[in-house]
Amino acid sequence: MRATGVVVVGTGFIGPVHVEALRRLGRNILGVLGSTPEKSRAAREAMNLPKAYSTYEEVLADPNVAVVHLTSPNRHHYEQCKQAIAAGKHVVCEKPLAMTSVETASLVRLAVAASVVTAVNYNVRYYPVCLEARERRIAGRLGPIYHVTGSYMQDWLLHDTDFNWRVLAAEGGELRAMADIGTHWLDLIQFITGLEVESLCADLATIHPIRKSVQGSVETFQAVDQNRPFKGIPVDTEDYGSVLLRFVGGTRGAVTVSQVTAGRKNCIRFDIAASQCGLAWNSEEPNTLQIGRRDNPNEELARDPALLSPTVRPFANYPGGHAEGFPDSFKQLFRAVYEAIDTGKSMIPYPTFADGDREVRLCEAILKSHREQRWVRVE
Image 1: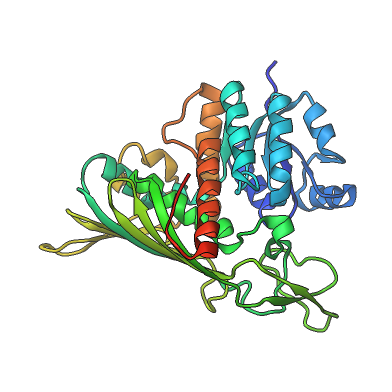
Image 2: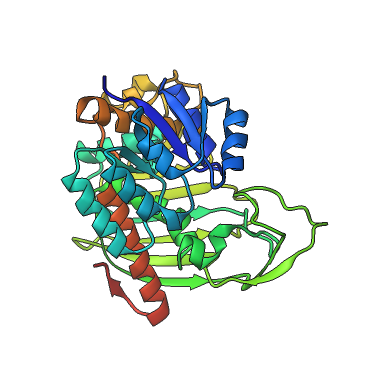
């Protein structure tokens, strides 16, 4: 009998999100692995899972495990992906896929040669109206695209007392805001428009070069106890960045990313300017796609399966007026991935290791452009 079990690796902010989405899809979650046996046991109890694994080797040796979801810190992704593929496990990895393009290119080669499904969790693609925007482009309802603009804004690192492992280059990589959230925007825009970034010019800024750390790292989006003792830690990853983009074929674009914008909790925005209409979307109001007209009244398309394209309808599970949001985007991405695992194909393309490799190459170009203060071609 074919193994069908799933294990989630990582117990921080995003690991439980994976568990919840997998449960809603009816997947057989065998257990969880934390960074220590103690964290594994605590997560198993908190999420009422069957098993707390002690080591990654134990996960891969379990014949009942078919799929591993990697939500561990960035620096572990390369080795964990490589080991999972070698063990014949399907892989869903959080972004970034790895720390360098040398590593991601290696993983792409391994994925192509293997008979397993390999995906990267760029979940923002799977908001239904974002899928609808892509379908309208494919159907020719936008016309040529003139330019794209947008942003991704957060405030969870606004204060210098906000400290998390992600701010350290050794843990998360030399880019932070751009790699952590900017790549979501870049993946989304290229997915919707079909355009590919050819060259770019980036300007980055570290607002807090010294951050005050409590003893140990604070979980993502967790409040800090101001009465605890702090220690100053030098930080050289960026809090803010803006990038000018040139796409293959000449289309222009621009994106701004910040993790220090007060009041913006998790706000992704885009404006797509095309010859037949404009499209605009805001993730904090995720169920509405704005359609701009020059010669007719503007429209707002509500997320309603009855109004969406046939290909998109399976990825919107509630009637119009019943909001779907952040957790649902994970569920819908996993729906596509597990459709590929179960049947060998997916109705809508899920983000592959090749997409993960592309985003790391974009990050390296962004960092090079900022350091050299010039336009850089993307490798």
